[in-house]
Length: 259
Image 1 (cartoon, one colour):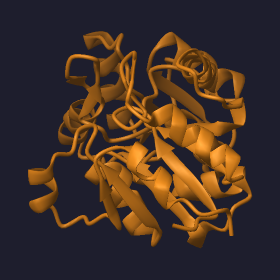
Image 2 (cartoon, rainbow, N blue to C red):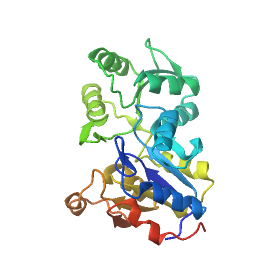
Image 3 (tube, one colour):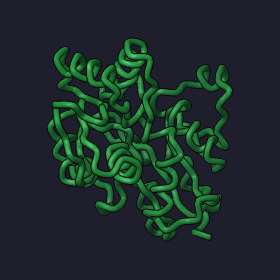
């Protein structure tokens, strides 16, 4: 396996909740030894970039801040490029709101140009109702990612997907997704790693985000069965990974050096 760079999912691929998955730390160590660039991609927008950096460091991963690329970062870059100067109503945690504000996004809860939905573990009826009325009034609808479930130590929690569909069904609007499986994540990752996009690989546990993104972007992928996707899910899906492994530990032996 020769690559220009690795995009690596977090939840369900490197860890579940607070538990590191077998071989995950050694996989990153091997990438560094072979001088293969990598970024961790996460659709989880409930926390900020610093949170994921500190979490991974505590788990034993030898990384830098530049190795973290979240759907929040993708949303910020998308809005700043396509809607410069527009005001945003955020549905997200305090950490999410602070991160987008620190990156130049102007937030408001009155007459916004954009409703931006993230994985909001503090979501309320009041927030949803405001978003509903803002969308009816003409605001753009953007969401960080489409995931239905968020992995935990004991299983899965409800993620952003059902709330996106709720607002779409009530307003007739379709949300623009900026995280996985949108190609924008691949392009930003390539820029971050200074890597040839065609030679990049995606490693993840979800068919409908990780593997679909790679397939849509025309790059190779590794599906690991350590998270959400099971063998029977793969058999019933039209989305096909390049390689299937039980975990990232099985990839180490196949790594060449960066080409």
